[in-house]
Length: 299
Image (tube, rainbow, N blue to C red; front, side):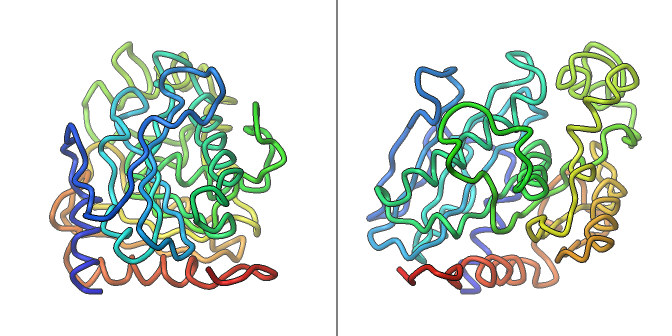
């Protein structure tokens, strides 16, 4: 398991994309599966299936400021060696559709994956999500809106879009209260080059209600899914106080949450691999995904 931990965390903290993911031997890869019938070109996912699926499904949600990135940047593929199925999904960019299109797509993908669980061999009751930056934001939204139907639109509405747990790497959580930690145009509350402006369709202060709906802290309840959060103190894109605010909401609701604050780390980087963190991350997944849900059988 230690080697697996290191491989997974190394992948999670890599910001580089590859044209083709390195698929472990014996793993079946299914590319460009549409999770919306006749939908947008971005409404597709890739699925990686081990020779003997053992139940859990990990869903990876890429980052990129809601305006870049791709499912080919899939992280966590080493998990397939231990019986996990892994899905990596695309969602509409903010220049193609403003919020809530991104979370609507993620929820549509989760519902589609649940509807097809029997076909591919994973357990529909054991699904986790994992993402960094914008992907961390969407992961946290999935975790906090599992029993909220506001963002469930389209097909497979008889299926739940809830996840059992999530891993959020330095994602924003409170958009109305967001304070840029640097002068980078990409992360300002106003300006044509701002990722937040593009996500919301206007400056944050002019879109406060939409910004509130886009904030994971808005939706926290006692029914939220457990979260494991990583955030660096030197992050120049998303300040660590964003993760701390979500943790405070979780604790007030009595929901399990773990925040690992990494001293000196930025928006990703090798610092996240220290202090035995990879082991704790994998243990978190195992604890929430290995035990079958009540009324289900072990696969």
